Length: 588
Image (cartoon, rainbow, N blue to C red; front, top):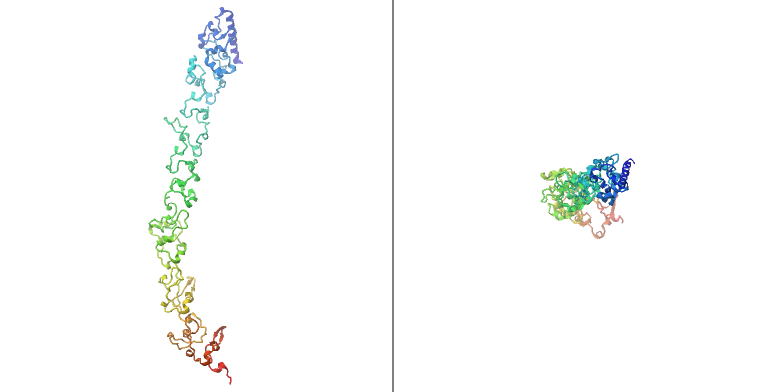
């Protein structure tokens, strides 16, 4: 109310003076006071009606006829003057107070108390702390030319500002965001930081370690000076390579995100890796190996020595194949499908020092290539390759042999065949193949006649062990004795006659010149090796009782009856009564 009392009082004075001048021209020189400097050209009673209308006082239409910029704003209903409470010009602009009077009345609080919100452009943030003329100055007026043409003093006017940031502030981005409001990213409190900017709404959301970078790390300066302007628009081309060097040199394409994560270059997503595009396509069991098993200590770009198996795998054979033409290359026998089975064929074995033949073809590899401690393997390897044999591996299968004789792999079943008289073991220095074939151990080609004991008759059908009985012991589980084997019948066969023929001194014609002792019976006098039946026995020649007459037709059992000795049946041959009465009775 206090702000409006004086203007209204002045208006009444203007209206009264206007009526008085109309009624009494003689008093035209009467004025409330001198006009302000900007209206000084209207001084004098002849110009009163330029601003005042008879009996109606000051009329806004008359003011607007000169102040066209204000009239235009009213037409557009823009700005402070379009508000109803400011429809009357004299509300704020009071005249006749002298040349030095400031024509704008701001109220009792002065210019600093003006509520800028009434203009439609509230002062927010840092703008609220500025002096009016820091913004309202000629070089910031977007309508400066039109205002000046309308007679407006640019240094005094508060018109002509646009309210757009770029009309007052230099474009720090040099047109990179033309068509976008500064308030999209910045607020009016401070230019930095850009509090309203959300990188996730751009084409490149910041994730992982990208969110930890300073802006200038990516948005570097477009031109000197280095501090600004920074490049923002168009910096992201859609590929990591637009900012980062490609350590793969294009071999894996340009979709880095298929393997890597923004949490870190070494944070790799294995499912996105196409290993076939590398120099080491994954095949076989390599597909099941975890990445970190090969790419240790974060070595994702390259694994040293991947060209050869030995670059990643320890030599399971501890250097036994080093020195070969292929330097013991694993792929000569193995593939990536698995270490076993090895692809070492029979044909490959034919090229070794020991071609497989006979029963050896059916023997599993591990039967000959047994596992030995690493220190023993080292003794089989040349000195220059022994470092491989002294690794942490405890044992390995043997593939090197100093000798390839039968007894180097097989136990000699004859070696422990010693006799009580201390004679040497049999066949100590003999070649096994002199008797045995490699098709079967039991395939024997031994010529028994070389021993002085020909195998004749039924003896030819016997197995060796039936005469050379195995000896079971602790040191050598089974040995077959050959030296010192018995050559007499009694040495192998029991006497079925229980000594009836012991002490017979007469030898049959053609019999060996062997003298029977009292306790020895020469079986060959009656029997042959072909059959047990006494085919050589001649009753007339070999006994003291020739068979004559009817006796020759009597069966042997008619005279030689079966008896028992210690519960065992035997046939009585001698002594036997020879008198007639012994068999036929003593009748008259």
